[in-house]
Length: 555
Image 1: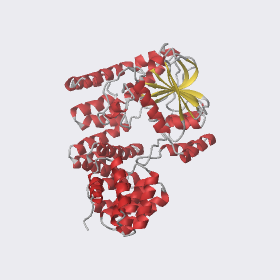
Image 2 (image 1 turned 90 degrees about the vertical axis):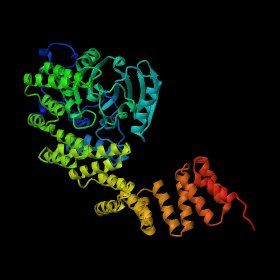
Image 3 (image 1 turned 30 degrees about the vertical axis):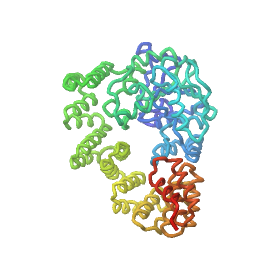
Image 4 (image 1 turned 60 degrees about the vertical axis):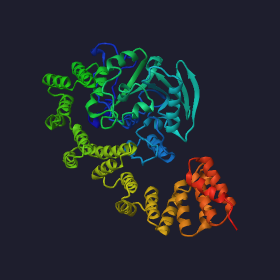
């Protein structure tokens, strides 16, 4: 649909349903005949809400994770300002913002922005868990408070109707599908297709198999729509399928299409029944039966790209993938999955050949290639596989050579593998472009420290602290560099600063103990080593030094 029709039709991704129309019932002819498509991510959903100038709405958000993410105050101000000006171009630019490692930010986690710009006044977060017990209530609270810090999240108590929170004046109610109440006023209904895969929001469910996703749905779209048909009246629906991400792999993106068609009462639902049966066979380990089913149904639905995609996956053959991409160009992501498999199997040349096929893909696909490899590198690091992580980070840089986050994490991993020469070259290039980048400066300081280049290490850590006055690690390493330079008094002051920032930082107490020991201030040294053992009883070095200092010297 072109932008010229924006005044007459809903933006792409919205399903314009008449008010009070039951979502799960009625004949196809009673539905709106307007067309729409599902969104790729929540950020695009949020933009569309802005186009329609929604205010003070209720959002019913079906998701296996909160999608209420922390956005720093300055970023929030820009989002709210752009929203109030109606500057959709600026909002679109913000959605492409890429977070740095360790920073809990997600502009695509649109509900936070929607809370603060007045789009919504109440949110029902519907989770896939069957019941909310005490442990689950703690997990919900952890997710909300962890995501929204430093903004206040007030827990208002639990009831049979759900868990009640207040965030910045907006009520957030966490419910299960069975406890979602009837809502008589129009709502913004947001359906994330993750909801259908995961049976729980618990962290262990997400990460027990890395980023592996269940092949089967715990609830079918048809059953889901029937379950909510008598509870909601709505005028707009968004479906976030996240087809390019980890949570909804490419081969299962059709779920969003099924939801869309069922809501509209349109489309050939037999096609989705065939895909559900495929997933059932695949989940049951019946690979041969799944392949036979795909071949049978591909003859019946020759223009269905998912059937071609699954045939290629099950056969390990590229020809069906090429057919799928001709039918749906966004399926060029399949080459990235193929490259990933080849790289992890130790076939780098094959991986390069697959990645080369992505070069002619749409820009969004190329961007996703870099993001996927970067995320894969982080996952491999989490699994304790730094060598494989290096390969993934290098693959990400082939698509986005200037990414500060990828270059920084690659350098950090190389340092961990004692490949400091290459790490220093990477960081030097990065600092030429971004001279005051704190993570890069910190890593450069670590290289200098490990190689005995004390003055250079000191200068690097001072530059970090100039940007981050409360950076505990930078202060601690600065103290080490100063001590190595013979500046004991300055080093002692720095280690005391570390303890003031983090009273539990036992290595700072140990470093102070060593300095006092060198200065023959035995009582102060003993006090420091005792503190180390109080905080970290297993520290053998501290115990050895304490024993040494407690042994009377012979005249």
